[in-house]
Length: 232
Image 1 (cartoon, helix red, strand yellow):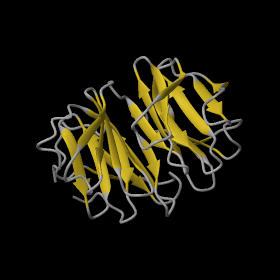
Image 2: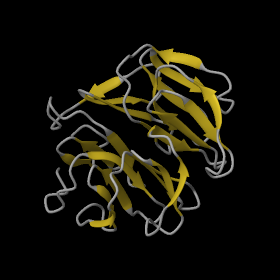
Image 3: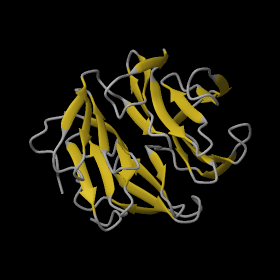
């Protein structure tokens, strides 16, 4: 179901949902916020937004082409904390932040983004993290997992078209790719693919899941919503 007809937000590159259920959409036209499950949207930032993430304190992290920005007041004001263009960002329950830059370098911050340590480089494309702070890294060589904060990695599969990755409250992995949605309930050991009603020409560029299990997918034609966990 398309839910942003009046918005014209452009390409929805990233989605994030806070603990109050507010949905944030980052696009080439800026950052938009919805407080009613996606029915209505308000623009809260004019800068082109590539990736969004929210920590347990409600701080929003927004990657633009000019750097990474942080907001501590629900998106009303922003502070620049990194000069790189972030391709993917995740935040653990321990508030550690992990980012992949557009040059494929991987960094970690343990102080809310004030300082950064490089922990990898290569073909890194996308990141996900679960409630145990296990990190999932999508690369051109497949999906990898780290259980020690990114110091060591083990390969889970060799799927090469890595897209946005999220892990829901039940530990299920959801990955958006060029032809649909990949789901795994066993840490990536087996995969289930679905693209029903998305269309062959609507690659998933962003994913988010709310507390009701509704999946929101950002595509190149806007935002889609599934109320049956990605089957439709």
